[in-house]
Length: 131
Image (cartoon, rainbow, N blue to C red; front, side):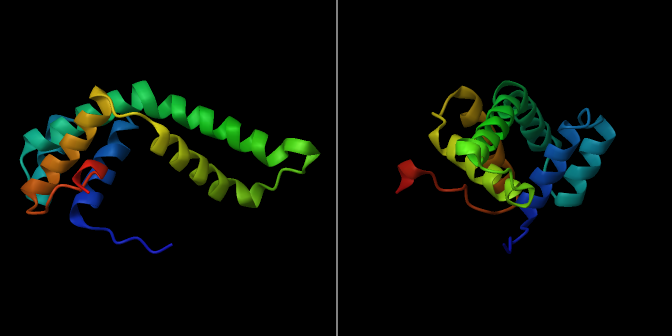
């Protein structure tokens, strides 16, 4: 799969990676904001939204997806095929994410992402409601 790494995706990926390893220091936050040409406030907003999302939703979904994938791959006595696991897991995660109802946490994460995009001169990501 070929993914276009736009500036917003790169910044969000860098923030998310740091939230998984303890968060950003004020200096790191400032450096990221300067590197990407956005305000420290939008970096902090996304960092906070991502942390809340990870702690309250993403970790539980990850565990659920791993177990569902393993069970589905071994149902009926089938042999677990390790090389297929990443693709099967990704499909399960996508299905769970798509089935997840919008709530205050997911809205704030989306709004924080869109705030980054706006500061980069990009439009917000369209939602299904925009269709």
